[in-house]
Image (cartoon, rainbow, N blue to C red; front, side, top):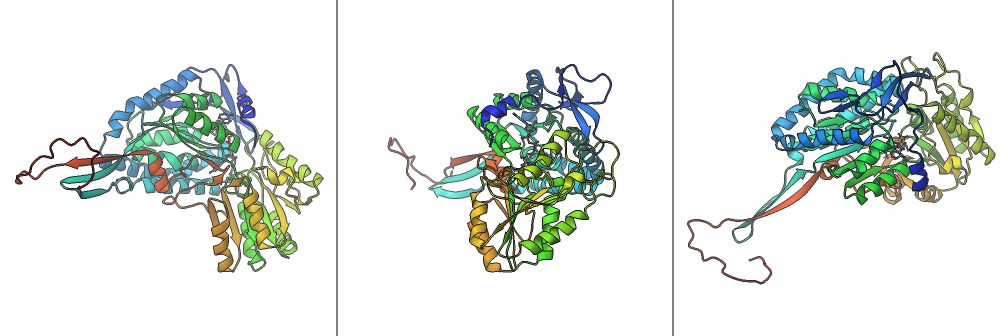
Amino acid sequence: DQPISDVEQEAEQPGAAAGGPPTAEVVEHWVGGAATRGSSSRTAEVFDPATGEVARHVVLAEPDDVDAAVAAAREALPRWRDTSLARRTAVLFRFRELLNARAPELAAIITAEHGKVLSDAAGEVARGQEVVEFACGMPHLLKGGYTENASTNVDVHSLRQPLGVVGIISPFNFPAMVPMWFFPVAIAAGNTVVLKPSEKDPSAALWVARLWQEAGLPDGVFNVLQGDKVAVDGLLTHPDVASISFVGSTPVARYVYETGTAHGKRVQALGGAKNHMVVLPDADLDLAADAAVNAGFGSAGERCMAVSALVAVGGVGDELVAKIAERARAIRTGDGRRSCDMGPLVTRAHRDKVASYVDVAREAGAEVVVDGRGVEPDADGEGFFLGPTLLDRVPTTSRAYTEEIFGPVLSVLRVGSYTDAVEMVNGSPYGNGVAIFTNDGGAARRFAHEVTVGMIGVNVPVPVPMAYYSFGGWKHSLFGDSHAHGTEGVHFFTRGKVVTTRWSDPSATQAHGGIDLGFPTNA
Ligand code: NAD
């Protein structure tokens, strides 16, 4: 991990330029129900990663813009918080219907700025929508408990209330789904939101803001603040922001957690990952090879649940590597709007960094089985492509293993036994996802019990929990103690109260308790 001091030095975001663009389209903030340029003259370039061209620019907030977005959310809060659950969920249902009808528009926006293929972008929207559907059940989720006659004539009930203005800070790799892990739950629970999306693909958030307006959400309940570290720091330190839900790389997640909590906020900060897929000797190797390819190269490996370390146990290595190599070579890489399997990486700088791990691994003694650097993509222009890359016998000391690469690079590690595999998984500082491929139910059950990882797949390579469970990793993959969505999400976005009530029966001729300065006990 990078130390925090390095994180602070990264304030200069790639593509940031003073002065702003003369002509190109500018992606703006969304504050109080309207798009606004705000007060900042700073902008960043937004690329079409498949062609390598600058498609538009995005404004980068200054502290004044943070204040304006938070003020809009704060102003909208009392009315929205006090809007009945029936009315709030009616808005959620309308949002769900609109999103369902217009999902392809959002998928096209994601592909244009992120690069992932259209079918993958549609899948991202569908997974986000599951959280919207979960949040439509908020009246049930917010029900408290009630105890009659806890003490004589005394009843107790519990309730949960919204936090207030909540901040959401999201990464580039899921510009629609990751914000949707949080805002449907936050809004349905009666909070108002400031979303700070990634400056690399900022348009999806703006599209979503317009959809909320169409669904009848009052202005100011959902705001979008475009920006970089300045915007993030503004939210982390703002006295009117009650909580922060962050998803991104581990060094920034730790910084966000430490800074946000130091400023009195409730923080959930989901970080990076290095997900292992363990293949036992009795596994179906064709199933395992398909899974490794799908989970390693889907979305060009830019998924926090991507498999990046394949652990071949016993003698399965040679056959498994041959099967994966054959499949990897057949993958069509190109523009996500064409019928390709895999799109580009998000920026040129990121592509170059990912590609550099091929030499890093080779120098450490790994074998480069498939080298994606020579790929000939089906695309026009100078897109940010790297083909599927397969590295075998990667030493665990190599940076290709110890670092999160976040690209289409799959490293194979060979171990002698099940115990060695578990030791390797548990030795990783990350603990987001892990998978085991086996036909031995007892081994799978033991594995799920003893790995120090938050999300586990048995013959499932990308075990993303359904919306009604909670998403989150262990160790350096999550700072804080609340995972996203599911009941943990509802808990995160609400605060509990317990009310103790005494009403005497009016028909009874009871004596009052009289004076007693002792500590109240139950009777
Ligand atoms: P990132 O950490 O660079 O950026 C995430 C957010 O933080 C963005 O909104 C960005 O503007 C902001 N940011 C960036 N640098 C900052 C700084 N120095 N100070 C304050 N804010 C800063 O992450 P990314 O490259 O956009 O996304 C990829 C990372 O996200 C990967 O590490 C991936 O594993 C992780 N991720 C994790 C999960 C999960 O559930 N654990 C899910 C998706 C992505």
